[in-house]
Image (cartoon, rainbow, N blue to C red):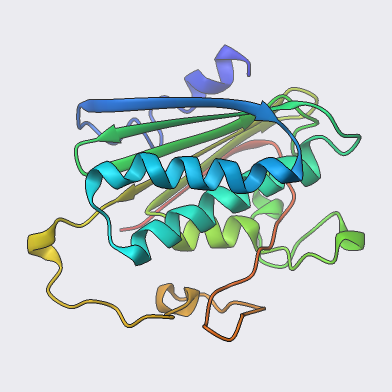
Length: 206
């Protein structure tokens, strides 16, 4: 990933988190569908240091799954290529970076629109970025055509003293203001993905 792309994001989703880094993990793996489950489980295992709730773990796993699936489907359409994930713990905040050196995204803003997809033959709902935004506190995307894409997300994990009301089991993405186009009987969202793009887009919660 070009240094200038990382520099452009230095003051973005992670730059706004001034908390000290207490732990860090890096992963590198082939862009293959069989590695998607490995990636989300590895990030979830790293997250357990913050003693998250089951719902928080599932939210993070879904966001990571969407980000990695986007790379597999859209960044390397001809196959091959590498995926890099960096995770940091900043006190009570998990920061996740997913990057590739694939084809890049022509229009990031458009790619982040719900239901937009360039791979209609994959029968995807085009909600990948929408789910990342819904399940994480911040989302930032930078991309250059022919050079790759960088996705940064963060999620604050509630402390035990803040957990006054536990959420009911099976609660789906609708609790964050987004409807899931496909659900299993227990209310969990099935995997979806959206295409990757270019330029810089930042999303955050007030």
